[in-house]
Image (cartoon, rainbow, N blue to C red; front, side, top):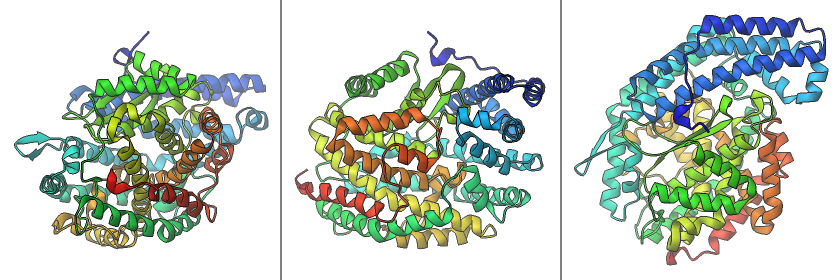
Length: 565
């Protein structure tokens, strides 16, 4: 059995790859029967999977160690050639949608593949190739800049992730110092962050205009493959959040201030939930994994098999360390049918959140790995986040393994933070709409727009005189804004779906799990609203869904004596 360390990377020879690909594409074009057409598609998909495998191996290894010169060079190579890979995929999609065997192919694979193909065709043209390369390089430069952070704090040197535990310290002065130190890194490089984003906005706007769109908002929705909803529907959802969740979040923050004994919640208090200290995992990363093994064994046969697969092949890199990129993610290494989990454990409850969250993505990818269509291995982003966020709740019955006497603290804070997150998530989304509708804005105008959104969605926020944050710069730490434009509302839509799974699992765990498992096995074979329906969930866009879902959460939070925790 091969482990991740032995997965072979070889830089693709792009001229040779294109030659092979074009020969296969001609076979597909000239197919004289449905059988020949499907054989050609299978051969094309095999080549595409191998290229994706090479890209993912580079992406993972370069993000684990940004100081690894070899993989950084390979990452630069893929920044350069990935638009060429997109060009090949687009050529295939053009043939696919106009195939004389389309009807039979659609019967076999479903209409989602053809809708994805249409959207890919609409989002690419060879004339924007150099602009796409530029966009990739800028995006990578943001990730590398954040990963380079080495913050001096109380006599030590820390990455941003390693500073995390200090932001939850019982001593308010330590929290303040840690949050100011973290903001200090961004402040120190503020001009660079502004410059990178300014160039990204302009290059994305230029790509959109060259492709015939009014601005990048339209292209952004196409790139995100938002097949069955649009910006107007998202706007209606944001209004529900403003009306229903923002007042509730403010009420919860007020309770938090009372609970931790401060007159007014400052930005460095937000991550501190209880006067007696936050819930933390009671052991090392290795201990967490051992307990994770027990949890997934007891949850279901399917999760047991999946987690063992991940462990046997070393498909997780979990601890925060110097030179490692920020954040957490899950990807799939196609040729090995192997999901991979990347995280930055730092001794906070977030370690368990990220383990269950990314395991939700990985479990879905594992469940649909034999689906046969590369496009269906993962669903579109907002659907994918349902798997991850719901897994956080399906594992609740096992939280005692990790948190011992802090279990009730963890559950309360986890549920409350899910609610708190939604207004922030829609603020990030609305910010991006405003930015790309006004590509000529200066960095200062963008910051003013963010400040206004904070007043609307995050009225509790108080930066206590931190000049960098008070200037409207907090958004610069949100990597998605730089790397994957418009990927953020997805988390908020998925959170509403995950809350529904939380409610269902408390009423009927077996039925809820059955619906979830069915959803995972479908992979990306349906659009967002198609998957929501298949999982027996209500659409977040439907009037009243937000209100009804959140009412149950509020009721549970109200039933807890939070001051006693």
